[in-house]
Amino acid sequence: MLEPPPDVTDADVLALVRERWEAGAGAAVHLPVGWGAHHWRVDVAGSPTLFATLDPDLPRHTHASLEAAYASAAALGLGFVWPSLPTTHGTFTVALGGRTLSVTRWLDGVRPTQSTPDLPELLEQLHGAPLPATARAWSTEIDADLADRVRDLLQQEWADPLGPAARELVVAHVSEIGGWTREHARLCDLADPSAYVVTHGEPGVHNQWLAHDRVWILDWESLLLAPPERDLATLVLEGRDVAHDPQMVRLFDLEWRLSEIWSFAQWLQAPHTGDADDRAALGGLTEELTRAHFGER
Image 1 (spheres, rainbow, N blue to C red):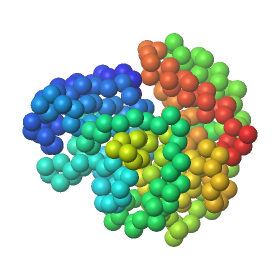
Image 2: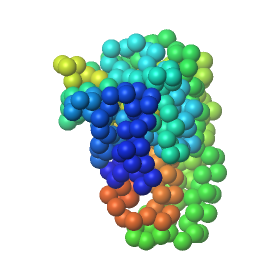
Image 3: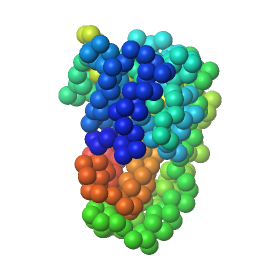
């Protein structure tokens, strides 16, 4: 997130990091990076040493699911995984202010300007990895009645400053949301749990990192056992020539699209200030309502 959280301070993060990860931590500085979670650089003896992430409590990211995901990523033993660090209590997460804090080591490097050519090979290694005992299986977070819930939301008042514009966007696309929801429900029935593999969930360029002359994949909060197309959809979106089941790619395109639409619509209907995060939410809503589907031009 671009703005600091209103209910958790740098001092709160520093105190918890000192208690559960690194007693010698000297400072925690909020970083306006990423999306969905808040992040801090944690310094030890004046040098960046740790990277702390505060994930919100969401239906798809509960404290229990985050603990399972981070523990599973750490257990993979793959050379491109940048994992979370265990606490002094042996867990990978700690509750903080109704959210969940986790920590990785600081990794000096840069995000690539475009998705790495190595991504298909890295995903092939990931999908061939033994299934961690702690990993959870994917199940859809999209309710079959999502279109009705969206229509109910449209009957409520949408708060200024960005709510009215967001509402107009949703009204213009509400019939498409209904069609996407019905298609999504049909495709869910085609997923075969016996063929699930370890998936990252969001392996796009925003979670790739170049450091120490190699490619790393970051941010493992969405790790689940799922059809490989949960990750391969990213390659299809990028125009890569990769073997895939088109129906499963379509499923995970719709899964992402509908979850983002519902999240952003709720956000912008509720009271907000119009800050950088709110403007990003409106941009995200616009993108998901108007973009082409994966594999389409």
